[in-house]
Image 1 (spheres, helix red, strand yellow):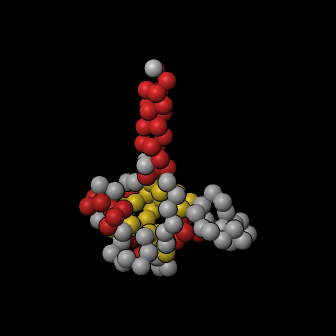
Image 2 (spheres, rainbow, N blue to C red):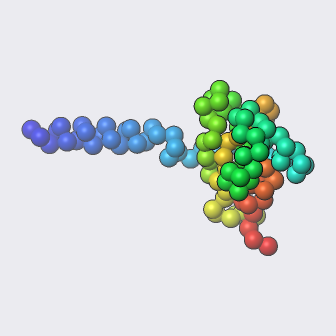
Image 3 (tube, rainbow, N blue to C red):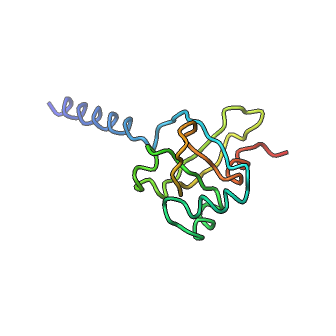
Length: 124
């Protein structure tokens, strides 16, 4: 009799871990601020209100995210691992970014600082 209960509990654990979004792989699009001054000035003073402290977070690997990631401010400070699909250009590690701003342009999910975007590249 104990065995069916164990199987139900195991199934519950498998289903709950499968629905945890922090473990999911999502395909999205990312762009970057081509103007270094813009990425240094806009993201730190962005919607999350970190101010100059943002430049010390994640070594300047910051991102603005669309409203579904920003979550009316609840997404501020969230970390994301972003990887490029082209192994000829990008390392397999990608880059980790911290959400510090809201991306109002819905053509991409993330807008990265140029530092974060360049961190995805292969060396050389």
